[in-house]
Image 1 (spheres, rainbow, N blue to C red):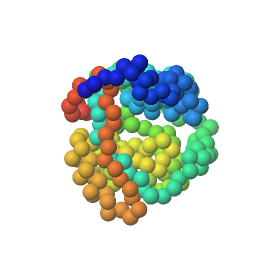
Image 2: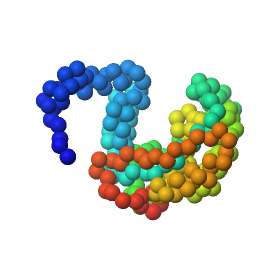
Image 3: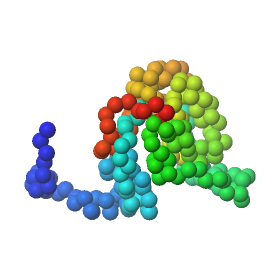
Length: 197
């Protein structure tokens, strides 16, 4: 593989935006945009400007499933804010930083997957709870909701298992599915996910 140096990039791409400017433009678009300039496992803080790479995480095969119904982010946040227990703060779960401190072979993957918006989204879109159960029934080691929904994801041991789950779910009307994989850490060892991770 040929590596192109900084000077050669500037010569080949004279209108190229310098990295600092590109990050500033990305941040102006939204707090989650800078991460996607180099999408590898990372802890993101501040207003999206603090990105700390997380070493040692392998690629994870995923099944993405969209139920085919719209769900507005604004409505999900409003339902979250209006929940009955909003006056009593929920018990905080473990932080990502604390969970990453646990050795990979001892980590329970479902404890790493959580989204506080999912109950509110499921109240607005009851098909989410049904779809979650269907993905769990296909053998996913963890299931979660992406962002404010309505897309869900299931984590699988390998691409073959994710593909089989996709075939089993395709019978659902309106459902759109994809088999993808997360990007590994730069320092991740190749190979399957450790048992229980």
